[in-house]
Image (cartoon, rainbow, N blue to C red; front, side, top):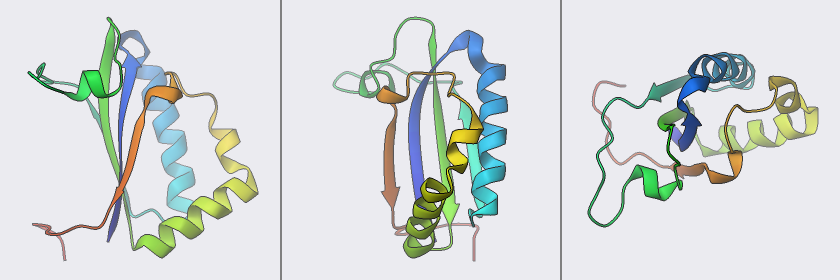
Length: 118
């Protein structure tokens, strides 16, 4: 298992546009081997004393935090899919993201422990 995670500031009034954009993107990622995607809209994101999700993405007034992750079979599958998606140009067909993509955070992770998965 290999996990790609993102933290994204999205204007609060763009929730439905984000949902449509994410669903379109998920179909593409599934076709390229992604096993699972979870898109989570902010419910409780407290301000921290030193850092927090909002400061990490320079969230502005009226923006909500989306926390999303993708589960891939392994790192090689993720890297091959990323290369193929860019070569094929399919990411251009998902439409413009309804947020400032320059402020999102992406990180990829090798799981140390997982509960509830084989």
